[in-house]
Image (tube, rainbow over all chains, first blue to last red; front, side):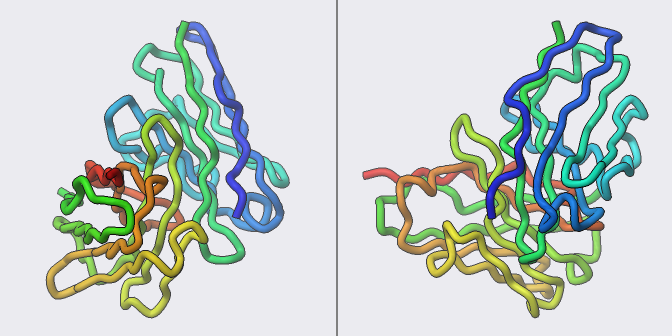
Length: 110
Length: 117
């Protein structure tokens, strides 16, 4: 199972919006609505930010939103804040019932 | 509070074995599938293995298949990962995570496995 494709890095200024893409295939992202997104700060465990493409867990800011079109899912963060600076990973259920993650995207808040 | 606590990591020589444990609390462990995910130093997340709530369904990444064995003891609220024939490329922080609606949440704090001579 090949990793999902994410940009290595994105950046934005405080208050701006950014979008991170996650491209897979019809056997993972495009075939199921089980795409999730995780935030990871240095030295910390990942934290679930979005599940089932666009749902936010309780306690996650509504500045975080998710969507999907075809084989590509996206995470959008609006109103960027310094605390959003972290690594972000997408993940998807797959036709082989195995998990797969994206390579990760480093978000820098300028 | 839902909590997962991994243990069992450490330094092991290539070809050696190690057994990781994940103690769960704050939820009905026997009702959830569980994942092991690892992260090599400075690298991204890699899914390792999954096990269904009753252990009926088990899956492995190709990179560990035949060497690692996932298991669980619902009576003890515990998840395990038996790792044999360890290689340098298995060096990573290993996380356990609960599977909820196709996603992993929460995650434990992780346990570091270092494979080196």
